[in-house]
Length: 561
Image 1 (cartoon, rainbow, N blue to C red):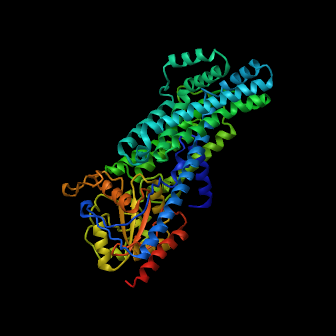
Image 2: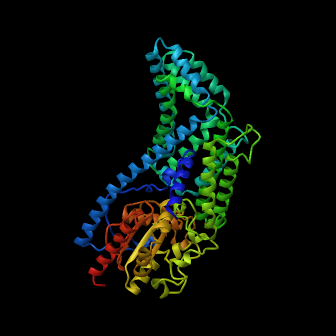
Image 3: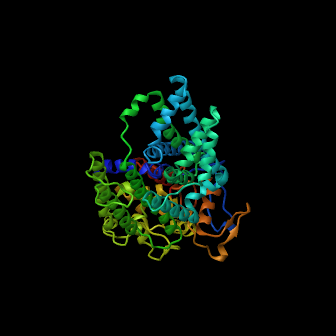
């Protein structure tokens, strides 16, 4: 992808962030959970076998890995929370431009100015109003955290049922923004809050803010709901509260700012049909992003109904229709007449239609690396002219050419970047011992955005691809797969955890033996199961990732195997 299209996509991402915040969070590191790190043999009960020798060298590596994970976990949580906050902030500013809120700005600010004894009094009342808005939405975020709990929040992103419900929810929100109906709360709630606001004082101002939240729900509800969904699926404990803080802060700032500087209201554009256009555009974005959640379900349950080209066709059509709408070629029954196209609207239409054209080559297998984290895996593409160029016209890599027999579970999982990985730990380790090669374990997931980005943007680098395909035995273990294990493999661990699916099996391996639950999670072992170097996560710099792979090879060579 050219530099120009990189900038183009980033510009469009800003537009997407106005709707749900998904783009901001998409490429943040997945949640990491770490604890005291000890390596010990897995018993036969688990159906896996891994041996970590009790040597001083390995102990040092284990301590180093523990320290790395603890530091990485704190860093990733901070990055994730900042991403959620920024997404909420942008979503809040988008909400201000909604027809349910924008016209209320001058009326509310005028009320504070006129009801105050002086300008300072009016500003203080507006400040209390803004703080009340923040408190209301942050409490909403905390309620979501309390209801689901930290464990549930961490599993939402890989839960098929929740992902399907999220898909339906976003489609519902999109239909509402497109004008099919309005999502409103019972009018009695707003009336009661309005009655309470007449009491005056700080309590009255608080209930005014609550009234705004209830009355504007038809406009803000889809944005708030989408933001809460995305914040929850990041697994960050404070994600929903932080997202709501960003949203409410952006929502409150205009009321306080215009109360402090009332003259600025003269520069505000007049309310009109353009406010409804904002809703419609966000409706298209909600609809597009809904399919990401449906894709997660399709991959986890192996429906194979939502391949990469199907996803791309839907996005191409949706964004093309959005572009036509911005140009006035597509209208809805509740739209106002558009006598001419404004310059900002024209520029946005150019961006959207250019983005649409950028996606078209993806139907023939173009990698579209900027979108790789959101799209289904490249390997689900039926007609792919790109992947064959990575491995010399489709030839098997050296590590797989020596063994033509189908790998266990190979019929369930797609092969990334034309590689031929193993999908079962025992089988992959046995082959590594046979060919005397080190092992790269990739703990991955169908719903893992960062995993897809790594496969499309880093693994396809010429040097990185050579290392993985020629010098390692690759084992990919999907921690969120819903395929049932054979009855003989279904067990209950000593801790009482039931291992019934392939995903259960590998997530238990990652958590119990590597004290981690992040994806992607890369572990480099020798063919006897010894840890070569501290494990690593997503690293989008091919040079840095190559150093990680080479460090494992160097450690393996020192063993003299």
